[in-house]
Length: 102
Image 1 (cartoon, rainbow, N blue to C red):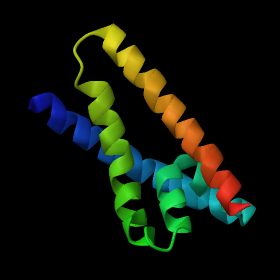
Image 2: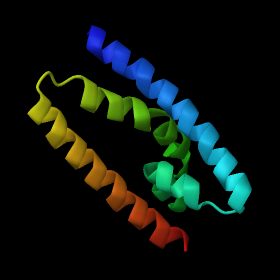
Image 3: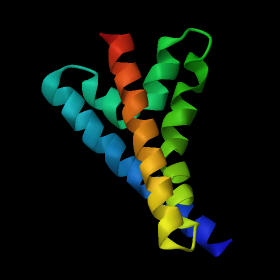
Image 4: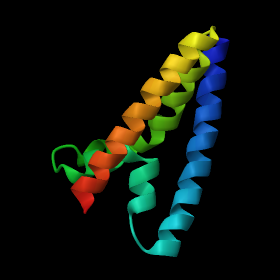
C-alpha cells in the first residue's frame, strides 16, 4: 500500500510538472502538438464528442497510473516489461492523436 501511495504522489507531481511544461511549449509554438504528445489519451478522447467529458480526468490520472504501473512491481524484469508496454501505448496513442488533430 505504501508503494502505491508513493507512486501516486510521484505521478501527481510529474503530471503537474509536465502540464506546466506543456503549457509553456503550447504558448511558444501556438499549436497543440505538445499537448497531444504529452497527454495523448486526453487528446484522443477530446476529439470524440461523446468522450470529451473524460478528457480532463484522463489528463489528471495519466502520470499517476504510469507511476503505479512502474513503481509497484518489485522485480526489475517486470518493470522493464511494463515500461516497454507503457511506452508502446503512449507512442501509439500519440500517433493516433496527431493524425486525428491534423
